[in-house]
Image (cartoon, rainbow, N blue to C red; front, side):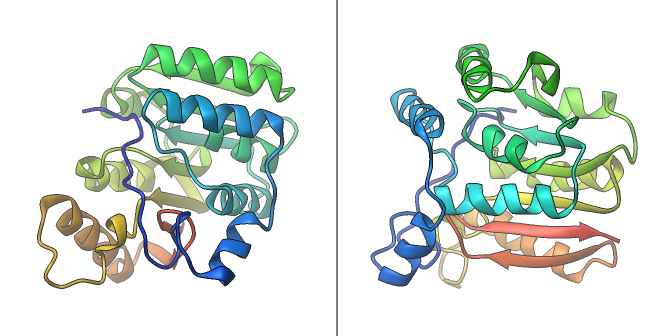
Amino acid sequence: MLVARRCPIATVAGSGSSTNPALQFAESYVTEDLVLRTARSLAHEVGLAAVTPGAGAALRLLAAAGNARAVVEIGTGTGVSGVWLLRGMRADGVLTTIDVEVEHQRIARRIFAEAGFVSGRTRIITGRALDVLPRLADGAYDLVFVDAEVTGFTAYVDAALRLLRPGGVLVLNGALAGGRIGDPAARDPETVTVRETVKAIRESEHWIPALLPVGHGLLAAVRC
């Protein structure tokens, strides 16, 4: 199962491409520096849709609010979301980031260094996330960010429940399903999977969730 980023860009509320002036302002509220703009440009070159600036700012906020020391990222990409996360984490925090694409991770490694993070701040693992995650310690992580194929959402949510400490945060990117999440007529497999995942987390006794309409949609949930 691939973990490279494949989130479609929505054209509805919360999308980075929205024509709503208020949402456009929210997306540009926290500006990106040269490092992030470079990482974003490189993502575009290799055909990846990186998290939007608004979503990145939300990731940084969640990492900072939780004083995150240990974070798991599923889907390294070219390092856009990784830089946002690292900038919100504690100064001694370590980001464990997983992807099947070696070339993407090579780019991300360079981006992390250019952003000023020493190599010890990141643990970059190449491989299938579902092969790697079982090797990570139970209850040892403060935040799990999933930016991968939605077909793996159910398995990733189950893994996050094991990996996160109580009070830790799960974040799923692409929770608006390309703008189709609220359309009952949308029955394609991707939308159905996202819709079922959102519903399952909302109804679970293990999570306290919120759906954030930034970027491609972030479903954030605190582990009880």
